[in-house]
Length: 435
Picture 1 (cartoon, rainbow, N blue to C red):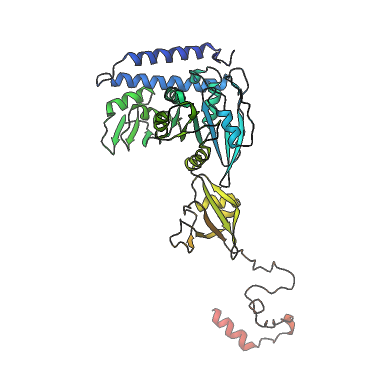
Picture 2 (picture 1 turned 135 degrees about the vertical axis):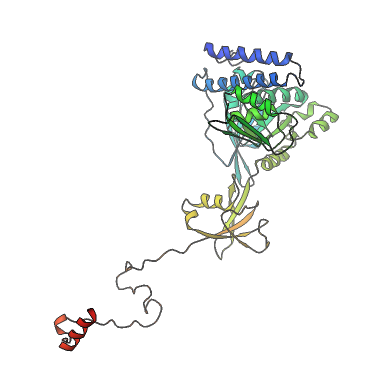
């Protein structure tokens, strides 16, 4: 019964935060949006963001009852499925991975996180089947907080929905993820905020602003107790984006909207859903369009496969290196060996990133590689010791024997008493020279 919707909070402070959040949301719904109320609405949005952050941070220290989702991260990328109960998440996991997840005709079949592994194009992609969430999950109902917490660590989110309820479920899920600081298919705002010790608020922008002005920026900063700062906008952003930049704890994650059970809707509705941006229509029960879904997952993860070859040998196409972060030669060197960067001299690259394709290009560490490139790493020559530290009897470096010629015989010096004695004239000349 607790999982079906009871809040996980027992502390009075948490309940107080929920009441404050509800009051602010009600006041924002009652307030009309116009030029005269934009500053008041901005202050309400700032307070709402602060309370939601306190609610999330407080839940970490005072977690509710139940089993947590401590799933170790394996593979080259992590993909999480989020959706309401009985939308086909467990069926999809069983179809595209070798993991069997319990499937039944009733809701809340999956009560914990079940991981699976997708082997696609030489990469291992971890797919997580998370329990279904309910409306109000961002406020602690059910296990929504734990589900959304795992989603924040993902490289891609699959928003699973029932095709017959697609519009309603999509709107509710986006609102729940927005409330906990997850931004789907959105780039971080290019806003610079530098705190200072004095001088007040200095506001500048490189583009014309239509959604915010300097007075509203200063008012929002005062809500977060920031009175001295330099603010620079490099884009036309609004109040919500500026609050995200102030807090700095938002997660910007790519997402795919997956509509399951396409056999339950009309052809016209199927065509409409398929044409929506970042949307895919599938049928897990009949296995329809699953290959296209895997292809879209690979494209949105933006993984890069790189094959290596030895000098004078053939490329190894069996086990490619999967690059995730920057996709440059430096990442390849770090994947090969920890000392490879210090020993790196240059690299030869064949493929689409080479300027002389199909011929190789000699590149450095910052060269960005393309998918399915072939790379040959060249390391610096090892330094040989010149202080006689080699094997016994070996000639020193630079000697005639070391260069392939005949070694010159060394002159042996006898005892000092056996040398030619100096005559008086020589001694007198030396004394004159010293003087």
